[in-house]
Length: 188
Image (tube, rainbow, N blue to C red; front, side, top):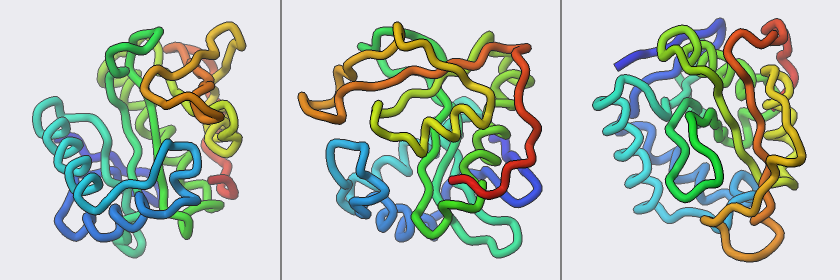
């Protein structure tokens, strides 16, 4: 399994010690504001097990993220094939961090590492990212890593119940497209 390192972060496999803070993160209604619901402890544990199984099988996927200086688990980031039933195909970048990790540039730093891995190691032609149309913080990360959106690509996520979270935006970054320098430290 691949482990990625940035100046401040380690993107690594999942550990037993990650399960408690991962469950707390997924039970936080502010963190989960753009998802249909918070997750139970059992759902969080099952997701971590799936993420690790994908890492073991493919060598890449949704990595656990820790702060290098402290070893603190702060969430996840990575790449994963787009789920079936979506109106597009490809590989998606994503991230979810605990609230205390917001505002330090960690999401952008981790996302840049994952996207670089996708282009350099997996030779992907493009990387996608999806979020609820109302999730402006996540869209800001997408723009900071060089992704762009076309309103014609906006869609209603078939996996989300009817309501305000269903409308989603699709961002893209093509291989070889210019990417901003990795100097932002004050974002989510």
